[in-house]
Each structure stands twice: as C-alpha cells, then as structure tokens.
Length: 154
Image (cartoon, rainbow, N blue to C red; front, top):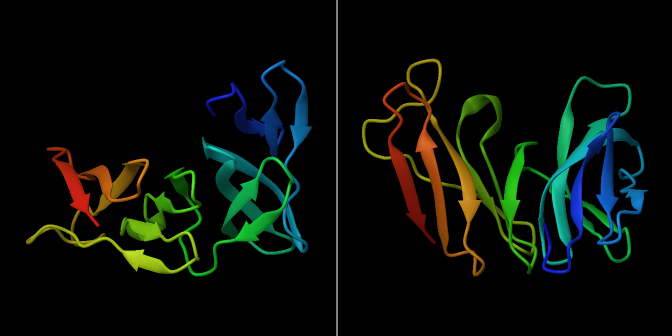
C-alpha cells in the first residue's frame, strides 16, 4: 500500500490499482503482452509481471500508477516481490531461486548466495522478499526446510 492508501493486486488475471477511495482501474500490460499481476507498490511505482502474448512465459514490469506508463524490466526474473519509491526492485529469483536486484535504471544484479548454498536442483536456493526504502538492504531466506534468514547490503 502506498502512503496515500493506493493498493495494487490482481483481478481475474489483470493487474489492478485501487485508489484510496476504492475505485479500481486496470494497469495496462506492455504492448504484445496480456494479463498480469501487480505484486508490490512503493510510492508511485507498482511492480509485477505480464504474460507474453502467445508464449508460455512472463516478464517483470514496473508501472507508474500516476500515469499508467509501464516498463519491462528486461533480463530480470518475472517475480518481483518488492521495490523502492525511486524504481529499484527485487525478485525472488524465478525457477532458479537466484534472487536479483533491479536498479532504478534497469540494471539486473544477482544477489550472492551464502557460501555452501547451492541453486536447485543441487540445493535449496534462496529468495529475496523485502527491500529498504533506500534500496541498500534486502532481506530474504533460504529455500530449504531449515529456513535461514538472509540479509544483503548493497
């Protein structure tokens, strides 16, 4: 939820924004994409994914909820979990469980795994779930049954 009470989510496969008064409006997918979901909102940036039309895959996207402008976060896994007010985002890491940070200008950075922690199928991998307002601290956890908490300092 944004400071003004705006929230985002998904309704019947469509990324949706609700104003503080409760009015709903769709967040349009990028051209050549259909449906999708908004999974996080910080400031005026909503984060989520859109389905590529005619293909069995998604792409990560960022919307400006004031204008409706949408940006594809090229090269990032398709599962943003949080973001910052300036447009940086994190992902859980997709099917490979390799969490990433996407800078406000769109650069994708892999978050390093702790020593000895392996990616699937050889290990549990990890996920990133929360990013600080300034984008410098990211939290997450291992994907294993012993669930270790993780903190990245960027």
